[in-house]
Image (spheres, rainbow, N blue to C red):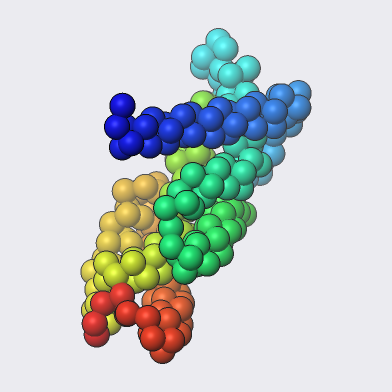
Length: 250
């Protein structure tokens, strides 16, 4: 067996071992949370329940939905709890192939990405959900009982958490693209009008079909893009002044 094949197999073994560690960590976190699955779902459903009309409630159309959906919420919570550990395993796998200056930048960006993802989820839960659900409850026609299935609600919430979590990663994405030389800051500024249009397109695709929802996703995406440009400009300039080769010539 050649050295290249041995190296490839060793990487596969290491990847398998790290995936097993991640699964074990998620399982360990899930076990105690499973006992509080009902309470976790109630917490997740609180923004909707607070806006339902008097006597309104959520429904379960699937026989086992009342059990499976809370368990899915518990599993999602377990994954979020161990997310820093998951990212550490990813970091430990790719770190040996990075240069020293790349490692110096990668760790802060990794930590920031976790924090920003959680901030995006918190923004969706505390700001987006109450406003959207409040709007929907007032828009419901007279005589229409506005209720939703718990499975559909969970799917909607999970989609919004992912959409807002990824949206709040925009500054990290911008910094990485500039740092590795894919694009420079001047080009990012030129792309600003297209990014604004693209943000509203993304908002229209991933949020309910109302203007408020689209604005609440699109505007943060645009502002975070601007923040990414500012931070990328600050981070890249010291590297250039220290004598390193700039990412791309201006």
